[in-house]
Length: 340
Image (cartoon, rainbow, N blue to C red; front, side, top):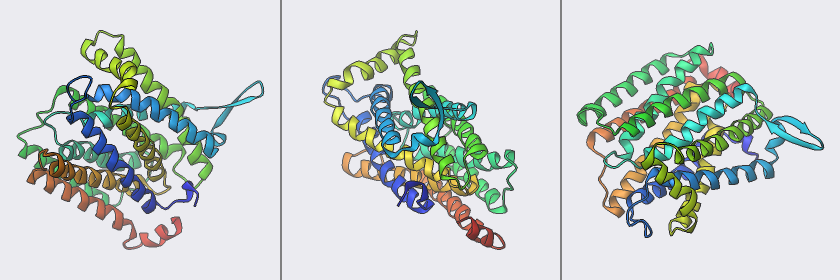
């Protein structure tokens, strides 16, 4: 079966299967002592090799799959080179924010995976209907009810924690993640959320040829900036990671990163409205994060999720279920069947 014709349910299942090892290996690197450094790797140290190897793998996928032919082309002599439009370039900038923030969010000491995921996934569930409103799509009653559930989940979790109490970099990570997703969803909705497989492939290629080089370039520039500590850590990722004992794990992490990237796009680019598609992706990531947290607690003696975090996850899943079945209720079930 062609990837572009995969059902949203199947794409979500594969996304879950790739996201779970992505979380586990990222957390392992950030909590297990590295032989060369004598301490666990930071998120800034793992970012460069994962983005570089993941970028190479994505280029191979785009080339071998033939998806590059669906992008806008620039003729240079006998060569035809895929190039972005202004809109896909903007989406690439938003995606670059995500490439930074997702792995960083899993590495903060004292910040549990379920808690940071509740903040980041809850924010995206909230902005999904906002993007639909801006795009002129009607937001149904079930979306507003789901927003209330998300707000309650966030309130309970933050209150139980006694406030956010996050490191500054973690707060910046959440903000950039939310901004990046808003930009990406807005562009997707404008140009690629239709039933045209060529539009999907073209968007994916054009977005990634901006996002991957941009994210790597920004990281490289930071290594030469006044941000001394961050620069040193990033420089390790650019220079020393390739001879490190962590390289095999980084390779596996890069493969999982590519899987997450591809199947996340397939879910979000489904022609249905964002208030339908986003919950599928969020459900998979939240479930993967919760499973990973319990696995890490059981096998590696890391803290179990708190009761408030579990309640928050349950409320988020309830909102996701509501958003999933809501469009199939009442008069909408006929139109949904036609879209499917």
